[in-house]
Length: 206
Image (cartoon, rainbow, N blue to C red):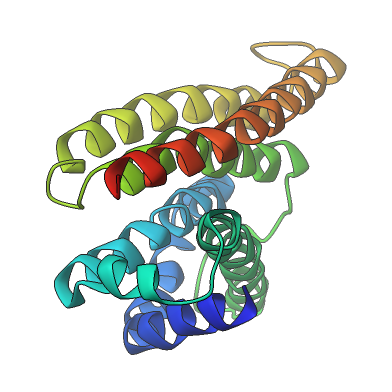
C-alpha cells in the first residue's frame, strides 16, 4: 500500500507549487476562513490523482499487480487524510508568519472551532465522493462532485461562522459541542465510505 501512496504523491508533486501558492492566498481571508477553505481544497486532491489515473489507464494496470482491493482503496483515502492536515499546517504557519509582518494586516489568531469545521468538511467530502471516484471515471463524477462540494461547503461554512461569532449565534460551549459532534459524524461517515468504495471498485472492474 505504501508504494501506491508514493505513486500518488509523485504524481501530485508536479502541482505542489501551485497548491502552496493557492493555500498562501487563502490565508489572506479574514477570521481564519482561509484555513477552513484550505481543508476543503485538500479534500479535492484525491480527485486530481484519480484524473491522472484515468488519463494513463492506471486502473487497468493495477489489476495486473499484486494489490488487494482493500490496499488500493485505502491508499487513496490515505492520500487525502495525509494531505489535509499537512496543507492546513502549512497554511496555519504561513498565516502566523504573515500576521507578524507589520505591512500585512492579517489576524493570526487560531480558532479551534474553525479548524475542526474545516476538518469536518474535508472528511465528509471525501467520504461521500470517494465511492463515486472508484465507481466512475473523473469526467462522469464531476457534476456530482461539484454538487457535493457546494453542500459540504455550505454546512461547514455555517459551522465555522458559528465558531467565529464567538457566541453571537450559539453560546460558546454549545458551538464547540456542535463542531465536535459533526466531526464524530464525519468519522462515522468515513467508516461507512471505505467498504462502499471497495464495492464500487469491484463493480467497476467486474
